[in-house]
Length: 143
Image (cartoon, rainbow, N blue to C red; front, side, top):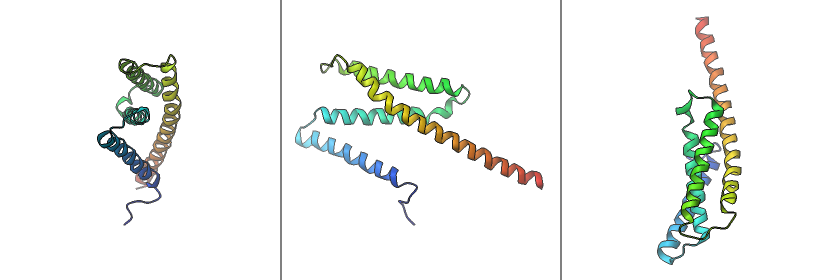
């Protein structure tokens, strides 16, 4: 039995890479006393990736609402979180005058792409499930 196959190869690489990067950041911070902008940026990217993935994964709880409203609400919630983190970080470091605009762009572009891929994949999964359901119903009607 293969644990890693062609269906989970890319996701396995992503998990291993993420664990290695987070481990490297932790080791550098704990043992070398190094925690700079690069480490902070990587941790923020991980945080926003995890938050975005979590929010997208919760769409099924909102199925009673129109899809466009759910998508817009998810985006607004996540952008608000990004702006809040940016605002809070302003108390600890000096922010560039374009920090909010840059964070908005840095989050929005990858999020829109990822959300589009997610919802298109979801659409095809639902379409496949409906087709299978129709096949099952068709065989039951024939009996």
